Image (cartoon, rainbow, N blue to C red; front, side, top):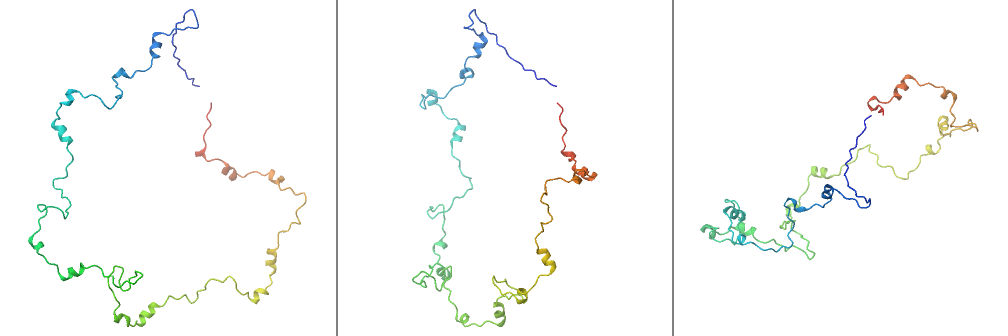
Length: 237
């Protein structure tokens, strides 16, 4: 057994003749003093955000390093800004060919706004696609005749010849089912359990003598043992 040894610190107090007025030693008086923050050169917060600036600080000149650090960050020398329509001519040089160019017929047709004349009073497009393009149906498509193969493909898929659909909720019962008679085996199985052999003084909680004198087999005793890896030995105190 291990015994822990506690260490106690004692302070010597000198007492006078009177027990009601003890006197502490110089060390105790020194330890009883509160901690002062000015022992290690600590300076507290300034009492006000306004204070006088010294003459040397007013006449000081910033060094080259301080001037370089005070400048704002500039972009990369090869960085190109976005071009706008309001940029001056030295930045954007338009050649004479672009100034005197004329648009083609195709470009003029594409630059026209979308035609919305085919809208009805409800705002529904009658002869335009979802993109607003005029797309009428040609007469050949209106009078076209589909082939026999297209008609066969247009037919819906049929069920299997032996497919049986869901049984309805109500259906007619066959005559043979209405007049059927259960056989002897089916009647025996449908009969409830008989209670005539149970005695009136039967106690279901009574343990029989054979169960009291029973002995477990070696296999059952082996299965009753705990798993060795989960067994922890008891600590001896």
